[in-house]
Amino acid sequence: MSAAPAAGSGSAAGLMDRIYRHQRHIYDASRKFYLLGRDELIAGLEPQPGAAILEIGCGTGRNLIGIARRYPQCDCFGLDVSSAMLDTARGAVKRAGLDGRIRLAQADATDFDPQGLFGRPGFDRIVISYALSMIPPWQAVVAQAIARLSPGGSLHIVDFGDQAGLPPAFKAVLQRWLALFHVTPREDLPQVVRRLAGEAGATCRAEAPFRGYAVQVVVRRAEAHARP
Image (cartoon, rainbow, N blue to C red; front, top):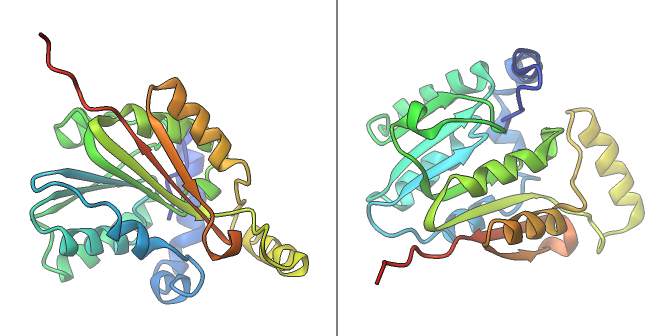
Protein backbone atom coordinates (compact mmCIF):
# COMPACT_ATOMS: atom_id res chain seq x y z
CA MET A 1 0.00 0.00 0.00
CA SER A 2 1.29 3.49 -0.69
CA ALA A 3 0.35 6.82 0.76
CA ALA A 4 3.68 8.52 0.93
CA PRO A 5 3.61 12.17 1.93
CA ALA A 6 4.34 15.14 -0.13
CA ALA A 7 7.42 16.51 1.51
CA GLY A 8 8.25 16.93 -2.01
CA SER A 9 4.97 15.28 -2.79
CA GLY A 10 5.81 14.92 -6.48
CA SER A 11 9.02 13.02 -5.68
CA ALA A 12 7.19 10.79 -3.19
CA ALA A 13 4.51 9.98 -5.76
CA GLY A 14 7.21 9.33 -8.35
CA LEU A 15 9.04 6.94 -6.03
CA MET A 16 5.86 4.97 -5.32
CA ASP A 17 5.05 4.83 -9.03
CA ARG A 18 8.54 3.47 -9.78
CA ILE A 19 8.28 0.85 -7.04
CA TYR A 20 4.82 -0.32 -8.06
CA ARG A 21 4.83 0.22 -11.84
CA HIS A 22 5.35 -3.51 -12.36
CA GLN A 23 4.73 -4.92 -8.87
CA ARG A 24 1.13 -3.71 -8.84
CA HIS A 25 0.22 -6.48 -11.29
CA ILE A 26 1.30 -9.22 -8.84
CA TYR A 27 0.93 -7.25 -5.59
CA ASP A 28 -2.14 -8.98 -4.18
CA ALA A 29 -1.03 -12.48 -5.17
CA SER A 30 2.39 -12.07 -3.54
CA ARG A 31 1.50 -9.99 -0.47
CA LYS A 32 -1.26 -12.29 0.81
CA PHE A 33 1.41 -14.55 2.28
CA TYR A 34 3.00 -11.94 4.55
CA LEU A 35 0.65 -8.97 5.03
CA LEU A 36 -0.98 -10.69 7.96
CA GLY A 37 -4.01 -9.36 9.82
CA ARG A 38 -5.73 -7.44 7.01
CA ASP A 39 -8.87 -9.57 6.96
CA GLU A 40 -9.08 -9.49 10.76
CA LEU A 41 -8.94 -5.70 10.57
CA ILE A 42 -11.84 -5.64 8.09
CA ALA A 43 -13.90 -7.97 10.26
CA GLY A 44 -13.33 -5.73 13.26
CA LEU A 45 -14.62 -2.53 11.65
CA GLU A 46 -18.26 -3.30 12.49
CA PRO A 47 -19.65 -0.01 11.10
CA GLN A 48 -23.25 1.07 11.38
CA PRO A 49 -25.35 1.09 8.16
CA GLY A 50 -24.69 4.28 6.25
CA ALA A 51 -21.20 4.72 7.71
CA ALA A 52 -18.40 6.26 5.62
CA ILE A 53 -15.18 4.22 5.51
CA LEU A 54 -11.86 5.60 4.23
CA GLU A 55 -8.70 3.66 3.48
CA ILE A 56 -5.49 5.68 3.52
CA GLY A 57 -2.96 4.09 1.17
CA CYS A 58 -5.58 2.01 -0.62
CA GLY A 59 -3.08 0.57 -3.12
CA THR A 60 -4.67 -1.96 -5.49
CA GLY A 61 -8.10 -1.60 -3.87
CA ARG A 62 -8.00 -5.10 -2.41
CA ASN A 63 -9.06 -4.04 1.09
CA LEU A 64 -11.69 -1.58 -0.09
CA ILE A 65 -13.33 -4.21 -2.24
CA GLY A 66 -13.42 -6.55 0.74
CA ILE A 67 -14.87 -3.82 2.95
CA ALA A 68 -17.53 -2.87 0.41
CA ARG A 69 -18.61 -6.48 0.01
CA ARG A 70 -18.72 -7.17 3.74
CA TYR A 71 -20.56 -3.94 4.56
CA PRO A 72 -22.87 -3.29 1.59
CA GLN A 73 -24.78 -0.50 3.37
CA CYS A 74 -21.66 1.64 3.82
CA ASP A 75 -19.94 4.17 1.54
CA CYS A 76 -16.28 3.48 0.81
CA PHE A 77 -13.48 5.86 -0.08
CA GLY A 78 -9.79 5.42 -0.82
CA LEU A 79 -6.79 7.66 -1.30
CA ASP A 80 -3.26 6.92 -2.46
CA VAL A 81 -0.31 8.99 -3.60
CA SER A 82 0.60 6.60 -6.44
CA SER A 83 -1.20 7.16 -9.72
CA ALA A 84 -0.03 3.71 -10.90
CA MET A 85 -1.65 2.00 -7.92
CA LEU A 86 -4.83 4.04 -8.34
CA ASP A 87 -5.06 2.95 -11.97
CA THR A 88 -4.90 -0.66 -10.79
CA ALA A 89 -7.44 0.03 -8.02
CA ARG A 90 -9.91 1.65 -10.40
CA GLY A 91 -9.72 -1.34 -12.70
CA ALA A 92 -10.21 -3.79 -9.84
CA VAL A 93 -13.14 -1.83 -8.42
CA LYS A 94 -14.81 -1.68 -11.82
CA ARG A 95 -14.35 -5.42 -12.40
CA ALA A 96 -15.88 -6.06 -8.98
CA GLY A 97 -18.92 -4.02 -10.00
CA LEU A 98 -18.35 -1.61 -7.12
CA ASP A 99 -17.43 1.59 -8.94
CA GLY A 100 -20.75 3.07 -7.82
CA ARG A 101 -19.89 2.52 -4.14
CA ILE A 102 -16.12 3.08 -3.94
CA ARG A 103 -14.64 6.50 -4.68
CA LEU A 104 -10.89 6.92 -5.15
CA ALA A 105 -8.64 9.98 -5.14
CA GLN A 106 -4.95 10.81 -5.33
CA ALA A 107 -3.75 12.69 -2.26
CA ASP A 108 -0.97 13.21 0.26
CA ALA A 109 -1.73 11.21 3.40
CA THR A 110 -0.20 13.80 5.71
CA ASP A 111 -2.42 16.68 4.59
CA PHE A 112 -5.60 15.89 2.68
CA ASP A 113 -8.93 17.68 2.46
CA PRO A 114 -11.83 15.20 2.68
CA GLN A 115 -14.32 17.91 1.79
CA GLY A 116 -12.49 18.77 -1.39
CA LEU A 117 -11.77 15.15 -2.31
CA PHE A 118 -15.02 13.48 -1.37
CA GLY A 119 -17.45 16.20 -0.30
CA ARG A 120 -17.55 15.23 3.35
CA PRO A 121 -15.85 16.51 6.55
CA GLY A 122 -14.80 13.20 8.03
CA PHE A 123 -15.26 9.43 8.28
CA ASP A 124 -16.77 6.91 10.66
CA ARG A 125 -13.99 4.41 10.05
CA ILE A 126 -10.48 4.96 8.73
CA VAL A 127 -8.20 2.08 7.73
CA ILE A 128 -4.41 2.13 7.32
CA SER A 129 -3.07 -1.27 6.26
CA TYR A 130 0.68 -1.79 5.87
CA ALA A 131 1.20 1.78 4.69
CA LEU A 132 2.82 3.52 7.67
CA SER A 133 5.94 1.37 7.28
CA MET A 134 6.48 3.01 3.88
CA ILE A 135 5.96 6.63 4.90
CA PRO A 136 8.91 8.46 6.53
CA PRO A 137 6.77 11.05 8.40
CA TRP A 138 4.24 8.38 9.36
CA GLN A 139 3.37 10.09 12.64
CA ALA A 140 1.84 12.97 10.66
CA VAL A 141 -0.34 10.49 8.78
CA VAL A 142 -1.67 9.06 12.05
CA ALA A 143 -2.35 12.54 13.44
CA GLN A 144 -4.17 13.51 10.24
CA ALA A 145 -6.25 10.34 10.31
CA ILE A 146 -7.32 10.90 13.91
CA ALA A 147 -8.25 14.48 13.06
CA ARG A 148 -10.47 13.25 10.21
CA LEU A 149 -12.51 10.86 12.36
CA SER A 150 -16.13 11.77 12.91
CA PRO A 151 -17.36 11.79 16.52
CA GLY A 152 -17.65 8.18 17.66
CA GLY A 153 -15.46 7.06 14.75
CA SER A 154 -12.45 4.77 14.88
CA LEU A 155 -9.07 4.42 13.19
CA HIS A 156 -7.90 0.85 12.48
CA ILE A 157 -4.20 0.21 11.77
CA VAL A 158 -2.35 -2.98 10.90
CA ASP A 159 1.33 -3.06 10.00
CA PHE A 160 4.58 -4.86 10.65
CA GLY A 161 5.33 -5.19 14.37
CA ASP A 162 8.58 -5.48 16.30
CA GLN A 163 8.70 -9.30 15.83
CA ALA A 164 9.69 -9.55 19.49
CA GLY A 165 8.34 -13.07 19.85
CA LEU A 166 10.12 -14.40 16.76
CA PRO A 167 13.69 -15.74 16.42
CA PRO A 168 16.25 -12.92 16.01
CA ALA A 169 17.58 -14.47 12.79
CA PHE A 170 14.08 -14.39 11.26
CA LYS A 171 13.67 -10.74 12.24
CA ALA A 172 17.03 -9.80 10.71
CA VAL A 173 16.26 -11.53 7.40
CA LEU A 174 12.75 -10.06 7.27
CA GLN A 175 13.94 -6.51 7.85
CA ARG A 176 16.67 -6.79 5.21
CA TRP A 177 14.13 -8.11 2.72
CA LEU A 178 11.57 -5.41 3.56
CA ALA A 179 14.23 -2.72 3.11
CA LEU A 180 14.46 -3.71 -0.57
CA PHE A 181 10.91 -2.35 -0.94
CA HIS A 182 11.51 0.80 1.15
CA VAL A 183 9.60 -0.72 4.07
CA THR A 184 10.66 0.03 7.66
CA PRO A 185 8.66 -1.51 10.53
CA ARG A 186 7.70 1.17 13.09
CA GLU A 187 8.63 -0.60 16.30
CA ASP A 188 7.35 2.31 18.41
CA LEU A 189 4.02 2.50 16.57
CA PRO A 190 1.81 1.53 19.55
CA GLN A 191 3.45 4.07 21.85
CA VAL A 192 3.32 6.89 19.30
CA VAL A 193 -0.30 6.23 18.33
CA ARG A 194 -1.30 6.02 21.99
CA ARG A 195 0.29 9.45 22.59
CA LEU A 196 -1.36 11.03 19.55
CA ALA A 197 -4.72 9.54 20.51
CA GLY A 198 -4.41 10.94 24.04
CA GLU A 199 -3.56 14.39 22.69
CA ALA A 200 -6.76 14.25 20.62
CA GLY A 201 -8.89 13.04 23.53
CA ALA A 202 -9.31 9.59 21.97
CA THR A 203 -8.70 6.11 23.35
CA CYS A 204 -6.23 3.60 21.97
CA ARG A 205 -5.94 -0.19 22.09
CA ALA A 206 -2.94 -2.07 20.66
CA GLU A 207 -2.23 -5.77 20.13
CA ALA A 208 0.74 -7.68 18.73
CA PRO A 209 -0.60 -10.83 17.01
CA PHE A 210 1.44 -13.56 15.33
CA ARG A 211 4.13 -13.33 18.05
CA GLY A 212 4.73 -9.68 17.25
CA TYR A 213 5.03 -10.15 13.49
CA ALA A 214 2.23 -7.62 13.14
CA VAL A 215 0.78 -4.82 15.22
CA GLN A 216 -2.90 -3.90 15.32
CA VAL A 217 -4.07 -0.59 16.78
CA VAL A 218 -7.56 0.84 17.16
CA VAL A 219 -8.14 4.50 18.06
CA ARG A 220 -11.66 5.61 19.02
CA ARG A 221 -12.99 9.14 19.21
CA ALA A 222 -15.64 9.96 21.78
CA GLU A 223 -19.22 10.43 20.73
CA ALA A 224 -20.42 14.02 20.36
CA HIS A 225 -22.46 15.14 23.36
CA ALA A 226 -25.68 16.99 22.72
CA ARG A 227 -25.93 20.42 24.30
CA PRO A 228 -28.24 20.62 27.34
